[in-house]
Length: 617
Image 1: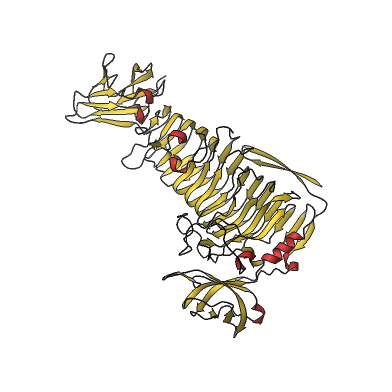
Image 2: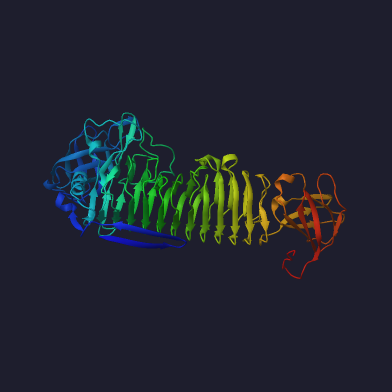
C-alpha cells in the first residue's frame, strides 16, 4: 500500500511518499513482558547495608522482587564528599517499605531520590524484533516504563571511550509506529543513574537507531514522553563534560535517541505529540557524518536539558509547533551537505542559553536553504547564532529579551564557508539589546545580509559588534523607545570590512553634540544615515568622517539635521579638507552622498513642522 502525504509549512512545501506493506500488524509491548510500573520516590539508606527503607507513600509487595532500583548519590565514592549513583535489584520486600537489594549502599542518608520498576529493555527489544513487513504498530499502554541499557548492568561492562553509546533498545529496521496513549500517560524512562566505568561516566540511551537499516520504511513515534530519569536535567546550560567526580554537567552518553552505525540509516523518522524531558545530553541526535534521512518534529516539547533538544547533522527536517524550554540550546544543526531545504517554524523557545545554532556551511556544497519562520524566541545570550550559515531566511519571528537577537560568534565556527545570502524580514525584537550582533571575523564574517521591515523596541542599538561584515543592508526597519542612554540605531564603529548600509530606516537620529567650548565634532556614517547636530553655543563646526574610506559603502547617504538654536559649519571631510564648507542653519537638514571617496552635498532641505522627518529624494 502506498501513501503520499503533502505537508505545507509556511514557505516550505514537502512531499513525502511512503510505502507501507499491506495492512498494519499490531503488537503490544505488554504481551512481550513489558510493565509500565516505574515509581519515583524517596528512600533511606545505611552505609554498607543492603537494607533500604522506602517512603511509606509507596507500599511494595513480594511481587516487586526482581525489579531494578536506582538510588541517587549513595553508590561507590568518587571523592570524600561525592558518590556515584547505585543501580541494584530488589531481592525481597518486608512490611511494604523495607527492601533488601543486591548491592549495599555506600552512604547513610535520608530523602534519597529513588526510582524502581521493571526493567523493560529486553521486552521492548523482543517486541521490535518481532515486527515484520513495513507496517507495524507497537502499542505502549499507559504507564512509566523503566529502560536501562542491559550492557550497563553487566558485570563485564567496560567503557571503551568516554563517548561510548549504550542504547537500552536498538532499532535497525523501519515500518514501525510506536504508539502511546498520551504523553502524560505513556512515559519511557531512561537510566538517570550514573556510573563511573574505566574513568568515564555512563548513563545510557533509550533508543539507538543503528545502521545499516533493513526494511527501510518510516519510523514513527507518537504520544510518548521520553524521560531521562534524572531529577534535574539542566545543571547550568551545558557547563562542560560530565564530571567523573560528581556526575554533573553535560553527559554525552545520556540521550533519548541517537543515530549510530553505518549507512543506510532510516530514511524517514517522525515524532508527533512527543515530550522529551530531564536529560543531561542532547535529547535527539546523530553522531554520524552523513545525511541520515528526513526528520519530522510536530507538536513536541523539549524541556529541562543540559544540552540541546535537537542535534542532527546534515539531515533535512521540519520542526513545527514545538516547545523548547530550560535547555542549553533548542537546536544545534550542522548544515554540511544537507540535500534539501529545512524549516524551523511556529514554535516557542524560552529559557535557553542560545535558541538556534546553525553551523557547518561548506564552500564546496552550497546549502539549499534553511528557514526560521514565525517562532517566539527568548534566550539568555543569542536568539540565533550563525557560524557559518548560508542561504538562511529568518521571517516573522518575535524575539523577546536577551542581549542579542541574531549573532555571529567566532567561538562557534564550524565549517569552511562564510556567512552569506541571509534574509531577515518582518521580525519583531522586544527589549533585545542588539537585534544584530557581529562578533565573528575572517572565516566567520558576514558577506551579504538584508534586513527588511523589522521592528525593535527597547534596544541599545539595532545593530552593532566588533567583527567583520560587508554588504549588510538595512531597508525599511524601525526602532523605537531605545534603552536608556542609547540611540537604538546603528553602531558600526568597531566593525572591520564595511559599515552597515542604512537605507530609509526609521531609526532615532544619532546625536552629535558640540558643547560649550567644543568647537568641532565628527559626523560618522558608522552610526547610520540620520545624524542630529546640536550646538550649545555659536561657532560650532562638524566634520564628515573620511578617515576610513574603505568602511563606507558606495552610495551611502548622510542626512544632517541642525536641531540646535545656532547655525553650524559643515566641513565635508575630516582629513584633508575638501570642498567649500557649508552653513547648516537651525531647523534645516542637508543630505550628503558618498561617491568616489568624497562626500557630496545634495542640498539643504527645510524641515517640516513637528517631528516628521524629511527624506531626500
